[in-house]
Amino acid sequence: MGKSIGWRFLLVGLFLLVGCDKQDAAQTNSGSGGADKIRIGFVVKQPEEPWFQLEWKFAQQAADKDGFELIKIAAPDGEKALGAIDNLAASGAQGFVICTPDDKLGPAIIAKAQSRDLKVLAVDDQFIGGDGKPMTDVPYLGISARKIGQSVGQALIDQMKKHNWSQDDTAVCVITFDELDTARERTEGATEAIKAAGFPGTLIFKAPQKTSDVPGAFDAANILLTQHPEVKRWLICGMNDSAVLGAVRATEGRGFNADNVIGIGINGTDCIAEFEKPAKTGFYASALLQAKLHGYQTADMMYNWIKNGTEPPKDTRTIGVLIDRDNFQQVLKDQGIR
Ligand code: GLA
Image 1 (cartoon, helix red, strand yellow):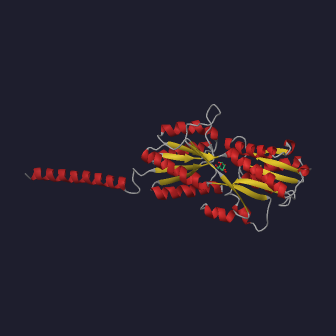
Image 2 (spheres, rainbow, N blue to C red):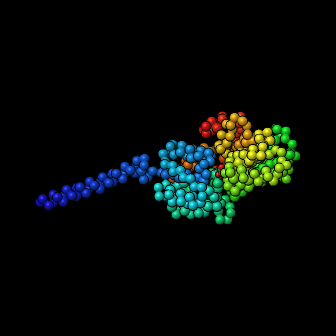
Image 3 (cartoon, helix red, strand yellow):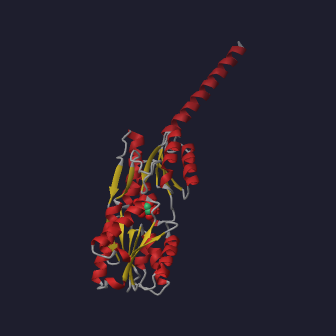
């Protein structure tokens, strides 16, 4: 008899233990840090650029609203980007938004994501497939690159006219980064508009960046300036603010200033400190892109895909508006950037 009571206690004890375990698991699953919580990665190639910091900031706003966990990862090279996918899978993420450090990594990113059962949305830089063409089957949100480039080119011409510069001693410095599709489209668009306005093609010079950052543009512009000491006035464009900032710094190193340089960037987020400098510089304006849509909307689209199975549109394009020293404060405020 004593023996059977002992067994009964043991059984009840075991039952309670199992019961507790189940309850614990259920609580964890429904709690905020639970195993079924949606986790979304946001991987960016250049975390030092204010543009990408803003994307993260706006993605976090989507996470706060929707209640998912955002995992921010910097991936400046291919190894880090592929490693990020493993890490995301290990942390229980179900999908990620990525601005890849190299658009040709697209097929490798997709293969790895599929093997880890993760959904992928490309932002900013569209994946390029093995055939050299954009991977249009992967959801993508990016800018209307050629159009925005054209508006920059047109604005440069308008400013040249406004300043009464003669075409004879003015040239155009186009900081190019043709390895990246969206960059090539932007600078080609700017060049098209400048030519369409009647500016001679022989005075439009390409200066290729080796790296898509301020030092890369600085070096590229310096080579061009050395080759063309005859040019008295420069119009400058490039794929983004960093490209134009680097080129403007290079012209300053050779004695140019706001009287003989007009640079117009793209992003509008990486030139705020430039506009805030007390004295005008050659960095005249920028096409402000919609960082909120790139960060908030992509993260929100990924959330809805995971949560409700709503697949994001394959191709979403955003626009830009020109900002300069006169209006940047108001426009940035309106867009929730400042
Ligand atoms: C690229 C550029 C960024 C920014 C985004 C906008 O990724 O490197 O600076 O212009 O495009 O989509």
